[in-house]
Length: 321
Image 1 (cartoon, rainbow, N blue to C red):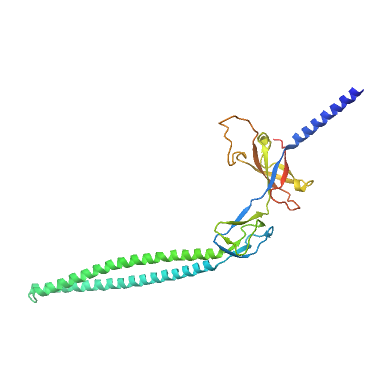
Image 2: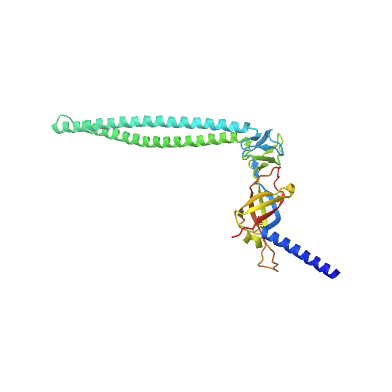
């Protein structure tokens, strides 16, 4: 009798275990190697200087565009004043060069008139000497005057070319000075460090009087959007496709599973992107099942705060294909 009871009990136990495994396999593929993620935004200063005002606190929610802290703008204001002076000087130089070119152009017109007069006088003296009404010396003097006028015209032409080149050079300095002024104004605006995205400020250990360098990350913003990265075994990838429904059970929200959807499957295993990837071409080889990251989006937002980095268990529901 005991043997019969033991046999029945063993059969029921095997049936229960087999039924559980069948149900689990039929429901989909699951893993507890999953974590809540958020795209952290590192916030740093774009100018160097000392902090004069801090407007954000640790774990404070900020909106995109909010001022987080201010840097002393005195040095940048001097740069703006210097750039404005350089722009004014460049504009004045361009104006003087244009006026000089205009004067040279006037001298060129006068030179052309003088050359025409000298040429007509030479022609008249040549006619008179042919008729015997004047002497050759008068023709020579007219020819000399014509040559002098021609040389003066050439000098005026060379001077005009130089003046136009000076105008172009002076005009070219104006946009360069404008760009320097715009850059100085931009640096002045960057003295107010603003939030690039909405989220919660983290690692915001800022102190008034602290010296910061350009590009130095002073705090991070954790955006409001969350997603899950689940590292599935490579043997399970055939059952996972973008768009598949996912059940997400965050450990911190035990008993409140959330709905999700597979967004994408990683292009490589975690080992590929490690700092020192394994080189299986040398030494002894031990086969290890690799894991591939799968990005999962939330379809139902959580009703409670969910910090990034929380552990989760996800199950991708099996879909008949």
